[in-house]
Image (cartoon, rainbow, N blue to C red; front, top):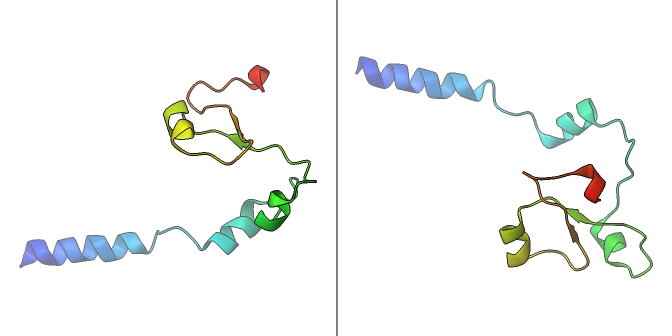
Length: 81
C-alpha cells in the first residue's frame, strides 16, 4: 500500500511540472523574427518559401513534402545549405 501511495504521489507530482500549453510557450519564446506562413499559402505556386527537411535521409525518403530540400539532422552543415 505504501508503494502504491508513493507511486501515485510521484505520478501526480510530475504532472505539476508538465509542459505549458503551446500558446504560452510561443508567447514566451517567439520573438516573431521569422514570419509565419499558413499551409494554404505554402501550397500556392507563387510562394517563395524554401522548405528544409531536417529529418534523416531514411525518413526523408519514406515521405517528404514536395520540393523539400533534405538537410539532415545529425550531420547537418550550414555550408551545404
